[in-house]
Length: 116
Length: 117
Image (cartoon, rainbow over all chains, first blue to last red; front, side, top):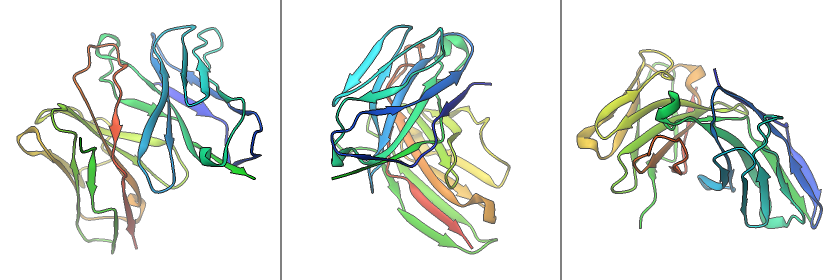
């Protein structure tokens, strides 16, 4: 079945440092890829997504590129802020055309802590 | 516009008791999903409703779990009887109709933290 593997945390960075959170996936067909973020005390929010190979999703300074050849969707940000402290989840989804039902398959989540 | 709302936010129950979790999706969203995150592990799919019908319940762990969606609006997830391994955070999500490509955004609630002691 489909699966997502992401780097384990927690990750602790200083403010303005560069962030990379690795994510790789195993899936049949052509899934859509997502990064969700959970800030303390809140639900999951969609951070960005990419729906086909070589697409780049971006939002709030975060970026991730759908790399089919390496089955990866690494999350990056050039300069993190304290307010970016959260848990980040990589996920994929298969639509009805490929046998899925838009349900999400998640990785284990990576906790990020940004310090001053 | 109200987001996805889950009740209660926390629940602590004893092994063998019954607990019912509730989810109110975003109005107009036909798709409703339940997920669960056991401590430190990945968030796992439990089941998917389209309106009042169960579209996919392949992730339900066993028959102690019963999900319903009355009239295609809110949904409940009942655990009876609860076991220690049922502890975790239960998330509900809703989305609009998906065109079939699997790229429709899902909106999540804050989750219900269930602790079985």
